[in-house]
Image (cartoon, rainbow, N blue to C red):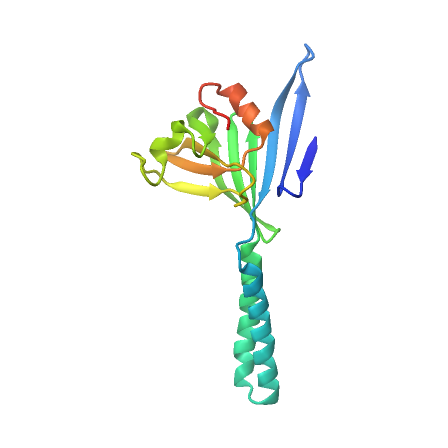
Amino acid sequence: SDVCSSDLGSCWNSTYIQRRDGSMYAIRITEQVTRKKKAGAGLLKVLMIAFGVFFVLLGIVFSRGFMLSGFLLICLYLAYDFFSQKEYEYTMEGTHFSIDMITGKRHRRQMHELDLNKLEVVAPHWHDKVAKYRKKGGTEHIPKYDYTSYDDDIPYYTMIIGEGREKVKLLLDLNDEMLRALKTLFPEKVFFA
């Protein structure tokens, strides 16, 4: 089943298999989160286009030297527009959890491939269970990766999990379905808001 919420900037997909006894279990849950654009990004784009066109016109009227800077500004705009469009896809399949980053709506790169058996805790960012991993006031400092939408209306969760030989801290916008599935697998390690 597919569910999309444009106002929340996320979509998720679940695949279920029915057992012989009639009960259902999820084998794959996918959630896609769109990163909210930062304040001022629209103004920056407009300024880059305006100055690019201005310099190209100056190059046509006065000197060709202005054209190069105009074309460079337009190329800079295209590169900024491409790299500023980020989406994240969380996929949970059994005890396998992966995070992919989609840039420019075309290019996919796998950021993490994790084994949920190495999960330490999943909790809201303000919860006591993740307090020792906070940047300010925490006792343990581990690498942090932010895969949230930056939307203030969506609560984000902190996942502490082993990756390779070290622990990592992941900030995620997990939907209710994925949280329930995690809670079913690891009831003592998952805490709700």
